Image 1 (cartoon, helix red, strand yellow):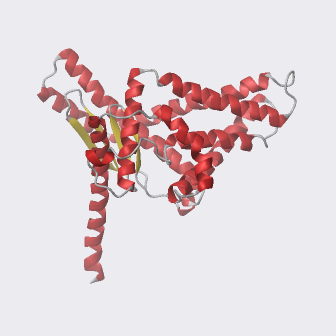
Image 2: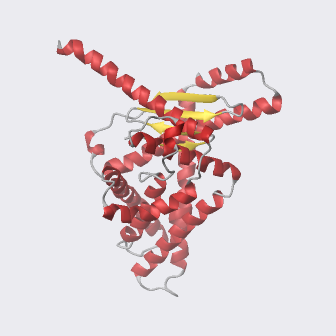
Length: 321
């Protein structure tokens, strides 16, 4: 499967073994970067159903943050050049120095951003709804299942409010447009159509395997999963929910994966309908130049994947002979 996400002024696309990031500079120039996925080899048991979903979430976070950091550095260079009048020669030198800076520093930055981002998300959508619902007990709500239902409703409400509020920010609206560009490119590819701008106009900005779908399914499944947990001390309740979260994410991944493989299933379509509606908040109709960025990222990663397959076939042919 091929997929991706929006980044700052661009799109990240991933194939099984490669990922690419395409960004649009202020000058209109298209910047493109292609790299192998750095964590392909894993023990066989981590590829089992449910477990592979938890690992896929970690992979998506790591790759997404790596792509975001690179796109942010490109945007920062544009700002520096516009403010200080940096010459093209110095810009190329800065780009070269940044690439040679070393993967260790980049990994530290990615790890720090990953930890801080997860921490904020866990607080907003796990800990805070739980604490608020805990304050309602035992004065207003006695039933454990009712408390978990209230907690789940708060969690979903916080997420919807968060998405709606950040969508008002101009920079985030642009990211949501690139999100729509990514979906149009993937929809065009999966329909077997040529990857050109004219073909993408026939396709919408909604996609069944979108991360928005995944998050909403996780939030809904957590209501049912957490309802079986005992209502003990606040710290124990939070720790139990965090421990159960990878399992919930793994199940959500399997549902999304199944929906991608069976697009004609009415049951799966009904289950995923709320997530598809929610994508109208997290995507915006993209401009043509934004769609071109998504197509460039997708073409690059397809070319890298096909090149690797041709190289494997060439190495296997002498061995077979």
